[in-house]
Image 1 (cartoon, rainbow, N blue to C red):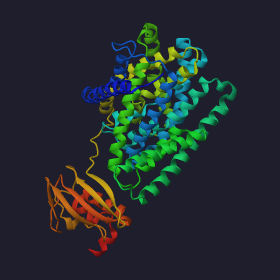
Image 2 (cartoon, one colour):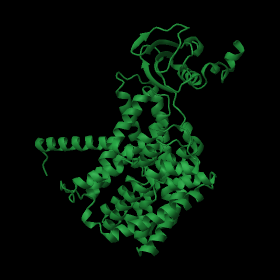
Image 3 (cartoon, rainbow, N blue to C red):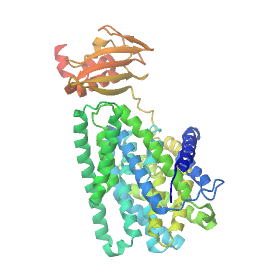
Length: 505
């Protein structure tokens, strides 16, 4: 098959129009309280062979490969934008949900669909494995907009970032027929090895990459986001090359890189968010193209609803309760975690694996999973705010009072920090001299309402000000920490967490 420049022109035009429509759909979905993935899926269905545009697409192997690439990008963005300080207290529960919880969910769904729907054991276990993981894109986009405590968001983000790895291995082994040869014990060992090895590889590349990035003075700020993403995908490729979990590796590497003191962190996160949005749009539209609406009948819908009921009302709550033995939580927290197991692209992408392997009944499984994801995303996504308020787990979100961006100064070992004083910051009304920055650090400029001010010690800072702070590189962390202290405590920061200053005063 040839691909000439005229076909490229058509592809660019259609791709740009579809992407713009998907971007505008984000606004619609946000107002309606729906995850945008549903609109993307329906765009794909409309473009597909069953829609008015009639674009044929039935290459399950290509969908499988592109789906894995898009999921890797989504996980990289999730790791880069996750605050480890918020996630750290709940990482044990998140890891337990991603392993023990997945095992419980697979078993419950397999038993339920075998006896309720009459599926053969192989297909029932396969369906349980496909449906068990939560979706990183859905979790990151929906939950980060809710005013939830750190213990809940941390657990759910850790779960969605790590539970792809064991389910990918399990679905792959079942689809290729290797599970009968390997046995339960060996299969469990493979999953554990892939998770641990992938995590270690990701940690090594994340730590090493952060060390290099802090010392590499690149000639353009636009190169830093590219370098960080390449490091994350290096972890994915390296882990996959040794048959470890690339998904675990890229998430851990991105988590470390995103929480390291790197130049242009804000730009890196913004760039990764943009690329991740593009990956989500392409992924969901492609999965919608893969669906053949003519195959969806009443029997498919009934089986999808039954599977969803077992998953949502039995498997998910039971997996949360069992997983919480590692890190106990209150009943209200557990109830919310049970309802917040958002599914999305991950189960549909996993359903392409048996399609690509030619498993008997794989088309039926794909249709069941597709319908189930759509119906239960419509059910759980919009109701999460109401559930959080009803259970009393929602609270006023912690305002982010300070945004800090860093750029390296090549000729000296120093960084230039751009600090924005947000409306909620207590730095408002504080004089520059009261910031009490480490020796050698100074506020060079204040940008206020488009005007540039050269500050003096008595210059009073205001909401909306942008400060340019020059700091020796070795004092950068201390300077940022000091700025955050003042942002959180105002003038009282001179007595908070600064014993060396206290004695001098």
